[in-house]
Length: 269
Ligand SMILES: [Zn+2]
Image (cartoon, rainbow, N blue to C red; front, top):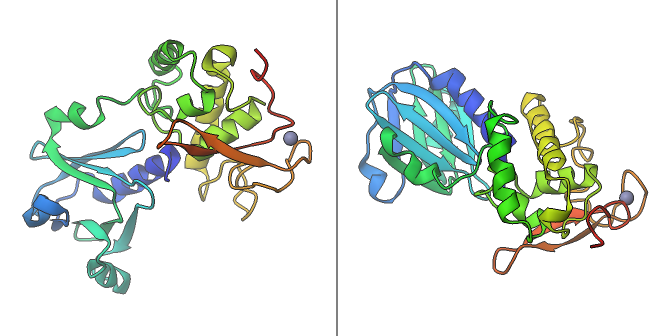
């Protein structure tokens, strides 16, 4: 599932091609929104909030989207062969185009058109975005207060709870806990939450700035994570096989990749 770094990358690209431009195409292929035509309105901002994206329009509305499991935003030159092909793709859920570029919301998992003043109805439940400009300022303080209220939950599960902090998924949960040598099932009250959250932010911000998404700083295939999706492969620190086991309560369990030898912080109470 795309995490906050992917959303920030998408927002950056969509901002560069859409913001300040009048839409020459504005088509939503989503349930009741199927007849919506956004042509003629101007995009004023594209704002990531955790794993959500808010595309604000001059007419006072906001297009709210979520990539869910396998969604993405694809940008093509207007009128190009790939753009013509994507226009016919049944998995495209939104088409926002200007005279120069056409953007395609491909396999989106959520789409709403709401009044900009009502954005809180779709993102108000989220904790602070770990990549927001005011994190580590007000955002970190707010997240720490929320984690403190969930002191008895496993840290791996709490990091994935978007109500406590927004943007972290299974990749950055696993990678941050590995770097902090923390056991994913240690309870929140027993681990160094500020260090873990700042590690997640650092890794994700570096991924946003990198040529391609990466949790390690390396863009070389196979070296973009230390533990995530590396079950059975040697730990980059101690050489023991990386393990994977579920965190979270059914039916919302998610895989926690980890090194059983290195990640001992918080393990013993
Ligand atoms: Zn290890």
